[in-house]
Length: 377
Image (cartoon, one colour):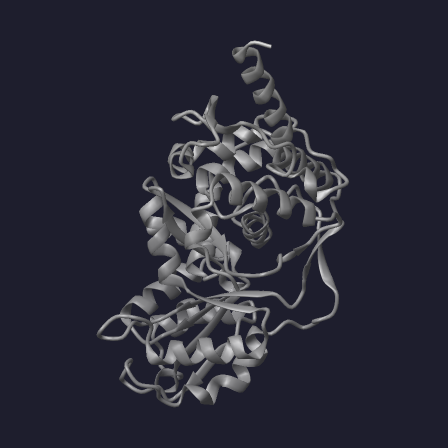
């Protein structure tokens, strides 16, 4: 056999070990099959492939790996990650009403003042510690972090519209009226579509005043039975005052009436929207397939659920990052996302272990630098 023919045969054999998995064994993952005289590697644009002899430096191989590698591999129907994400997509689309979220899960946006040197006020820090200490299922998010990140990535909308859109994700919006900006936020969140989510904490010195705050947004909140908590608030934002006096009432305000069972999700999760279900679904995809970039996650969604409008993805990633549920880091000039949570938020009627394993093996073999930056929880 001529040298060229032997090279082509070796290429074909190695190609089959990468792209022809067996569904019954983890050994079918990329790189676990026949050893070859060549390494499989992508072109600079990530859209075509070539060969590298095994005696060449592995560092050279790693330098050729571009961000487009995952996206390109997903386009091959016989690749392990393509097979697994398509199966996951079919299972999800065919499982409406069988996907669920624990009732106890609560996402709370916390608004208020910042310290003179920056960072959340001492009251808000105390509230966050208290609420998250009530349950591992309670997640408190400093609202300004969310809206700052969103304003940076969504240039076509003003912050007010973004607040109204993204706040529909939250279960509760807790506002401490300790600054001028907090009063402005109360006015925005007292919108009819959001006021039922409000929990308001105010200074008891103003409880009987006939001010616009009392007869306007607070009155509107009371009409839908939104809790309003009063206590003698101090003038400082850098030190803790008697905010603990509100904690018994606050516990009831942020809690759920029934902590038993779960909520069934009947909508199409692949239709991303400003909802808590979409937020947690995106988190779970990052957990299952990451660490990966925004662009790669779009290709994962396309491979599993078809070519749809995924414009909401950037905003949901920004909320997840601000909430501390995912983290981002630079890898080869690309921002990459990794989950900070070790288990999915949603409960799926399908085994996701093979999906997770196939993407982990792919990253380890083709994009190992991702794990140089990754953290483990």
